[in-house]
Image (cartoon, rainbow, N blue to C red; front, side, top):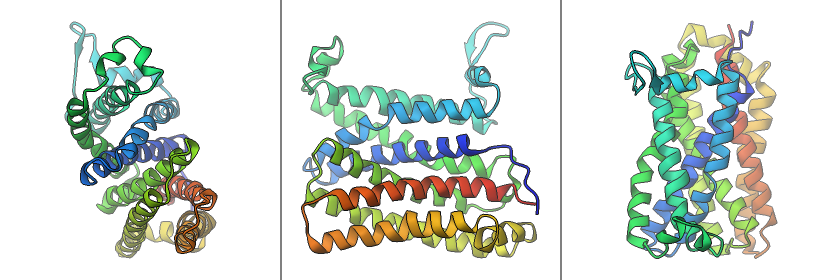
Length: 306
């Protein structure tokens, strides 16, 4: 069994942050929509969690690729003259444009509407002009759902079409990453709401129930993924490493136990007690975030096993 690692932890971090922030955005917007405004605060908090993490994640990806300045070549070319370019045959080019659209709509424009309602934002030029524009804010939010969800999928598609041949043989990696992103997005919302002292028991209960759905989808996808890969000869060594070899601790302890089972038990124990103290679900959410990160790193490393 050998490793030929090309993408390492920085790429795993990028995949994690991209999925987490995109899910936090569309979950927040959808929560406001389907609650008819009752949970509008989730849309506000979700939009605030995007810009800094996604920029950090993108920077980590570009640095890990070794030529960070070549990033612009996927969008702009200078020959024969300066012009924008979309390479439809390149997943990286499509992904870069998708991320740019996502950052502009979901990470800059949409949160600016919320910022205009804050005391700080109301004093900022241009931003203060957005105050009270509720209909426009909602329209921008609904539009932003599409690039946000596509970013959530793209983090898995990027692996499926990468040089990691193992993941190109299965369609389940994008599904797994969407489910994992949902778990991480909800966990980040719980932590953010707690930090600003706006985490009510009712909201937390709704978020925990939604997170449970994503966790179940994660486990189902992992099970189906492992079963399907067992029928592929080149995947046998990778599955052995995950279930009982060099990656087993990361899988069983990092992802399954600490990242999924413990958060589930802690959250539902807290809901059963109906305790207003929020520290237990916050700890559970932190564990969920680590579990989501471990999963992405695990998938990357398993793909390099020969």
